[in-house]
Image 1 (tube, rainbow, N blue to C red):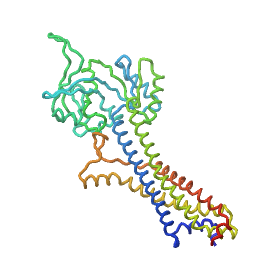
Image 2 (image 1 turned 180 degrees about the vertical axis):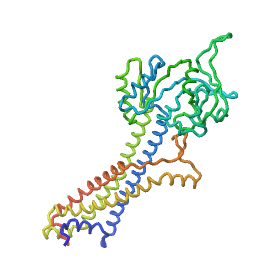
Image 3 (image 1 turned 30 degrees about the horizontal axis):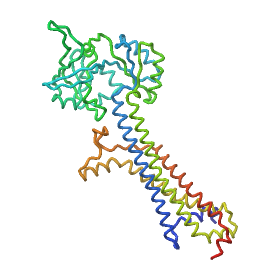
Image 4 (image 1 turned 180 degrees about the horizontal axis):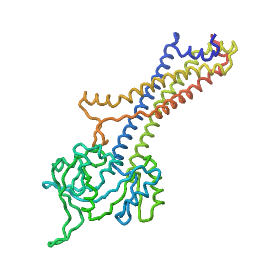
Length: 416
């Protein structure tokens, strides 16, 4: 015999009732509502994670995680500083750079840019620029040959390609017999990169060899600073503080949060807000169980009275309806989790298919940095959503179950 009879009867009540199909319909609607709410919440959180991941990769594939600069404007004997910084346990790689402002021109077209001098073999260890080359290679930058890498959008604007020459003009002045004139130098384009949507890198940066940059900026053997790659991106502020205490007052240390921190705070705030708002949808569906179970309790008053007469305690009666509500919530949550995972995994393909079928574009790279819907499923989010749904479903069953346990047999059977 099935001994825990509250479980047995609760499961029996969960199945379709022959006498009152309307109550069964309410229970089914509650179950479907929970499933839809959970599925939508998992999908939305996955999309938010996808945007976070894509922007994270695009920004930090190029931007500085931690940067050490000189207060005086240039670092001499940067190799010594490099050795000192590299001893820190959280620092994985370092690379020197020279940074300056200038203009580039070709056939009458002029554009202001940031000129960045790099060591190709060092730069490839801390940034993804080598992976973002669409033409040429970063290894094409040779010292003394005045080669340059430019962004694809900038190349299109200037109408140049591999093998063409551009004129680079810097604010540093040169004395000539006719007076002071800006410094300029002709560079060969040996590579074109493309960083899609990453805050204007394609339009605003050109990369040259660090030796050529030192000559162009008249910096001798000095560099502008050191870029550092750390073990954990989110440890960058702590590493920055530690280096500030370690290095002398001649150096200033900065990290990515000072430039891009607001973007990630905004994304996290949006994700938290969406989680809370959409959780209310799950809550509404879960608390539909209240009305469903209250109607069931009203419908089953005679059964409850008989069970009480046969010796069932109020706790047994309460357990029966707790089981019924919990089963509905559990099944709805499981269906929602399964549907949400399936939808989150296939969301990019589904949106792409809709865009192709209706000839529309929902996402533009000029606004969202990418031109497709990203989705990244996070099992921690799935667990949080599932547990939240189960807890709300359980809470929704407490009042109807308590009300059922308070029914008195004599009152229930008076009109039977």
